[in-house]
Image (tube, rainbow, N blue to C red; front, side):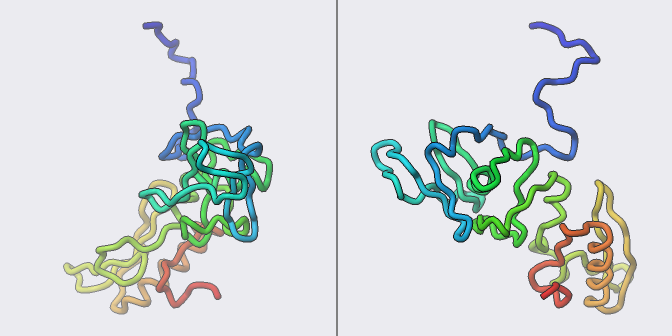
Amino acid sequence: MPRRCANTPKRDQPKTGELMSSIVRPLAGLEKVLRYDANTGLLYWTTYIYRIKKPGDLAGHQNASGYIEIRFDRKNYQGHRVAWYLHTGEDPGILQVEHIDTNRTNNKIENLRLATAAQNSRNKGKKTGTTSKYKGVAFYARHGKWMSQIRANGKSTHLGYFTDELEAHRAYCLAAVEMHGEFANFGENSPFNPT
């Protein structure tokens, strides 16, 4: 087995913080077999595929993770990445294509944007099974108060203890706007969500 020199970077390795959880496949050539409707976010075959799909048939299915997935030439492609590529002509490469509204099946172009893995992780809803109904808040029994905290750039920041759960959530939302910018997500049930 050949040895790699210590100064030689590993081939095809994206920078830390930009790794994707799935295989990043080049998308070139898919424009020959797929058509994207930016208004609906749906993808359609433009040619006969596997003798069971004909031009005009809807492409893809919802996978176990909730994303639209397209199988072509014995490879799986994420529908939102294909949609971005077909609409913009740009292969996102190691960047992720994020669903702004966090709905994994909404592939309308206005709901998609490029993001690093770190930016994409900021736009997540509230975790299930927590002690608070609001994102960024947990009940701290030792003090008998609601604790607010936020995670950014790989570290957690404590925002304080509050007697009121909603005030703790407000502190989280203010910090999210400052630290996460356009990728801030307050959670679906937040009364502070922009309208």
